[in-house]
Image 1 (cartoon, rainbow over the protein chains, first blue to last red):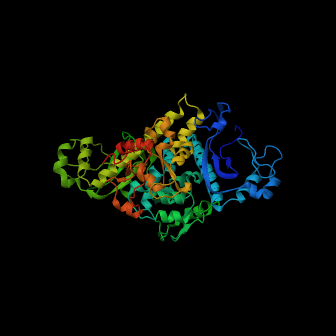
Image 2 (tube, rainbow over the protein chains, first blue to last red; image 1 turned 90 degrees about the vertical axis):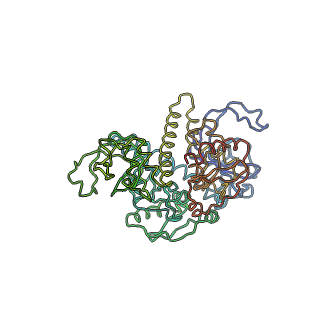
Image 3 (spheres, chains in turn blue, orange; image 1 turned 45 degrees about the vertical axis):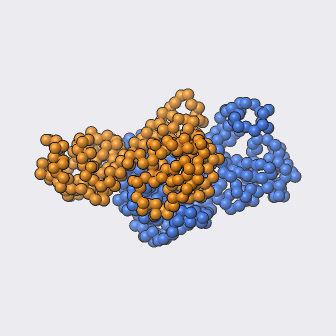
Length: 272
Length: 272
């Protein structure tokens, strides 16, 4: 438990199936046994290690035993999670190689692959932005008030927001104009911007919160002429549950187009 | 310029009308005259003070001159923004009394009143949460990893998110289940919670980003039995632009009901 690092992936194995995966979000820490721990754990020490994770259930779990021929060559001779006949070994946590993990993932649904990639990406993107913000805050050559502007811009607030609203009058897709319900979203992500780009109104769109979410995560993007691009990794059922019609949202200006090019290349559908 | 404080409201007066209001977001700082400053400012010093604001245009600007009888008793004898005949005095920034400001606002559309209240509220809520987070980070009696959990919970991440997803399977309103598109939203706001409530899965809902926004800002709430409440301050056009149907979202459990009671009392429609 002490060897896991934030960002590591953990697969959960139960009754012969890989039923979930998790992204580790912090280092292990000492903790009492949870109160709702099952009877089977009565013999365990009260004090142990705890690791917090972001937990994702898998809809169509695979049974590794059915694929044991593909997995066997990658099993370690000691401390492997599976026996050579494909049955599970009993222990709380096993370390596996990258190759083994990739093989397991290759056996899973496309949906799992995508959500695995997205979960890790969300984790690392957030960490990158946090680190950028810390770097910014401790930079001696930037004035405090400028720092505040730059930090606010990460949240789509302040100077960046007012700069964007001078250029974009409404949500490009849902057309609402009420500023109370609009997010000022960076086209080129904040953590990948220089300080000029962080406040540049042309590097932003005013979007409804759900459209902002899809754009920010790379599920949608826009062509220069305003046509909407939809990632194949987005379940179409979401577009219909949210009644999003893929209208042409109107052409972008020259400066917006540069930022959009970045979005299409490095954010849209990035890992799929 | 040096006397303004974060959270102060500034009204913009142009050609006889109050065309916008702003919320000050940081103290004044020295700055060069902007490059795009109009010709009329040629005589101004290059170096001056700058104040960053969150800027809101007013759709139906009022002309104070038309209401001068109501305003006159509140005008200061010196350094007032208006002359006694209702015409404007020329200067960059005037200080006015709370009473004067309230009188001006009372003459404006309900829409302006509401957006003014919401803009200030967003500002102060955000500041309250920032301060709470700083307090938390510097609290000596909480373990570092617990601090990380509590900070993550403010962003709807980590332990709080997984706790919520054990209770709520999907967005109550749009019914989507894809975790990549769901926000773990606190029912009782994070900044008003104790540390137990911050991580309590019963204090959360999994919501689509736009539903989360409406719930978080108090535009919508829920009855214990699942009926949706909509604030009168929410333009109905937004519900239709986002195709939100006000279905019964299903009853809540006993613990959720306690938190919802708080939401209905202190978040929903709070300032209207």
